[in-house]
Length: 339
Image (tube, rainbow, N blue to C red; front, side):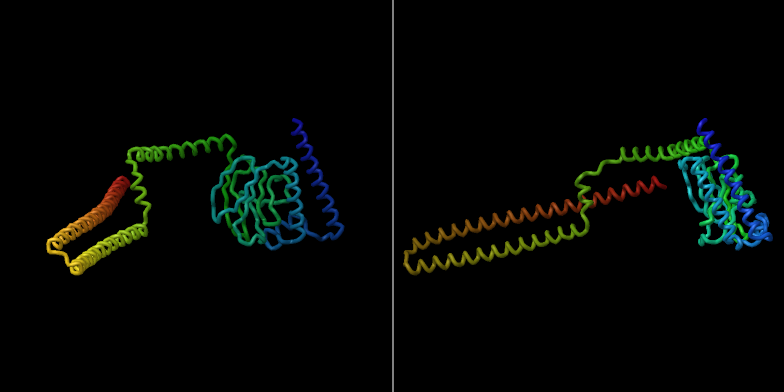
């Protein structure tokens, strides 16, 4: 109750101050000249010729009244007001707001310095009418201020006009807190009902879909460059094995020829009998057989390693083919479900 009394006193004080201001302003104008037009005539001239709206005297008077209204609203609401600022779209559009907020509406004109007139239900909105203490037009960018919105008084059609033509129309609907709460709850329930089936379908699909193995995931991560390097490495290993086998054969042949030549020279120099020569030949043959056995074992081992590598390459290619087939099948199934 105390706050209400304080607000009433503030309203009475500002109304008294406004009346004194208008009295002094009229006395000053009479003292300067007796042929100056009255305020209503100036408003008629403004309606007929919008360029007069830029008149310094009128602009100063309207600007001071608009600042006075702003100050009055700040004192009345103790600076705790919620503001919403937006620009209208060209043409006609519907808007919904909650009761109690402060709104600032801009007309959709690129140059904000043009003189713009605001109308509510076809009636010009004036800054000099203190009865409309919640409505005012800014003298800086010609935006419309409604502070605060009231459900009954502020519902209607608002227009911004320039040079007599309507630029934009806004049909403003105001909801109280209960209506806004019910509407928000309904929109939330609608969203939940729409999203819940999609989430359930996604969970069911993920539950019945078989899990992808880790090796398959790793293979998917490999790009074409890695596969190219793997093939290059296998080719180099094959070439290396072939060259190594060839060199080993050449080394065995050279070793065999050298040993035979050495034994023959030693036999000729010493002059051993034929029985001993035959005995040494048998030993040479045995040693050559051992060498050939070792070479054969090495060659078989290399061949076995090579075959194992070839098998691993074939297995990896088969796995890739299976993965691609499964992927194609799954994509076909998804397409069928989507259809």
